[in-house]
Amino acid sequence: MRNAVKKFIKYGLLILTVVLLLLLVWGVGIEPRLMDVKEEVADVPNLPAACQGKRVALIADLQVGMWLDNTDTIRRIVNRIVEERPAAALIAGDFVYHPTEDEPDDTEREDFLEFREEIDEVTNLLRPLAQAGIPTYAVLGNHDYGMPTVKYAKNELLARNLQAALQSAGIRVLDNEAVSLVSDAKNDGGQAGDSALYLVGVGSHVANTDKPQVALAQVPDGAPRIAFMHNPDSFILFPQGSAPLALAGHTHGGQLRVPFTPNWSWMALLSDEKIYADGWIDGYGQPGNRLYVNRGIGFSVVPVRINCRPELTFFTLR
Image (cartoon, rainbow, N blue to C red):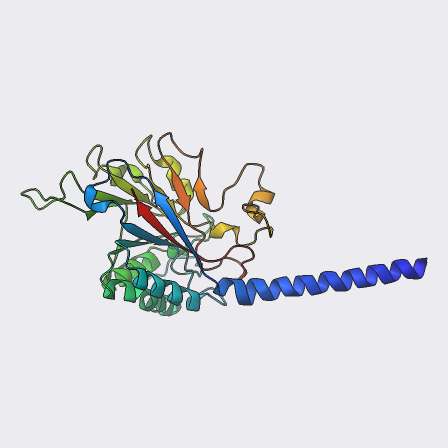
């Protein structure tokens, strides 16, 4: 009997080890290289006739510079967006990964070279979007300030250089700004008229630069708009009815989710509250506002994705 128990434990541990190894191979080497292309329909009140049926692409969390970063998948996703040619492409922050403890001063700029390489790499990966003539917009995330969490010092130099590089590649970075995506009419001053669709982009929540009210003040009352941010926590700062369609990233979908279940991630399992790491989030934020969270492409902490493929989302506007 004792030998039978020992044999059962031995083979049980062997099977468990094999399963864990297979999960590791899948989570590190296979699933991060897969691409989940999602098609969603998004309601935008007062949407101009010119925008009906237009598609907008959303990606997030490239995290270039993370060990085993997912640059091949980024490249394939960018190519897919170019093939699909949406009306606009939105990138919801966290372009680079590495944290910094202090902002470099004039005597420490040599230490910035590592970030320079990451910035160059990420801009080269994204440059085909603007070269294809796709209007491309971005907001910065916490890692773009060198801040995995609020415990880290805000690296303004990193953020400024990243923003400048993105804009030189044809990607407009919105920092608490609103821009017109599509307009049927122009007034005499050359500004978007009443039939414009606005994109409202806010800054990083962790870096304490998200100011939705500043961006919303640039949108005419009642004008159709898409709210755009990195961190879903910025969404609760939007007043009632000011963000009927809001888009974000940051969560990575939890990266590790219980297989064969739609929403159970490690984030949900460790939280006392109900957590939605991706997709449409109902019952969150102010009345009249609705948020969609993209799972992103890259990684944080560990380069693993299980039951949580990198996501490219296309929204058909109506």
